[in-house]
Image (cartoon, rainbow, N blue to C red; front, side):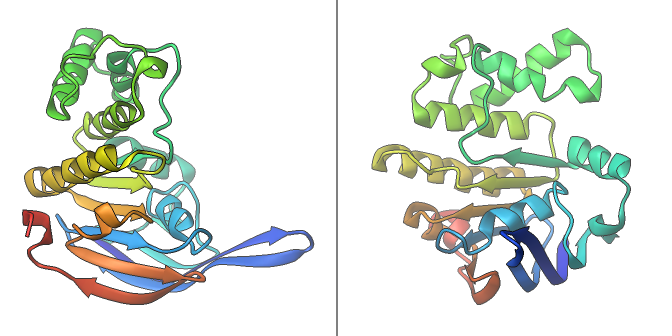
Amino acid sequence: MYHLTGVTKCYRSGGGVVRALDGIGLCVEDGGALVVQGAAGSGKSTLLRILGGLERPTRGSVELDGTDLATLTECRLARIRTESIGTVPSGGGLTPGFTARQNVAGALLPLRLRPADRWELAGEALREVGMDKQLDVAAEELAAGARQRVALARALVKRPTVLLADRPTAGLDAAARAEIAELFVRVWGERRLTCVVATEDAALVGRAPRLATLSEGRVAAMARYPSAAAGG
């Protein structure tokens, strides 16, 4: 479970201070899915980075399963990111020149598995997201929607307990957005991960089990839709 209390994040810019997050408080239950929407600059991506332990809040606590990420050493944070958190960054973040399978297998390197095991697990993760026929295609040769499927497989391959995705449908056409939104809904239902997805896309917002709306770094509204994850 995530439990955020009074999370504020400030950046220095042009001699002044930008308050990207301003006293955020929210909870995400174990196995729960939260979609975070808001206009560009509302704080969505900053919130995702803080949830993933990539940044620390200026003030406030970010508890994951009772541990405040804001107080951990860099070494402990890195271990939690490696073992427990799968991330889909904005744009997918795939490595050009590497095949789909190589990109996914690379996520397992910190776990020190045997190369044969990494290769097998990568194939399984790609098949789960519908990429079984493009395992050996280079990342740059894949369609945009396929690249996002690979990015999701890379996040899932290490069997994390948390999945974080930053605008996973950005830049896709309407058909691809709908497919990726449906894929995330299936992951929520089957994997029972604790999921937080930041988006501006109605295709994902409309399928949100829980929805938080950010405005100027604050939670402007919260809503719950019990049947959304089941496709209702």
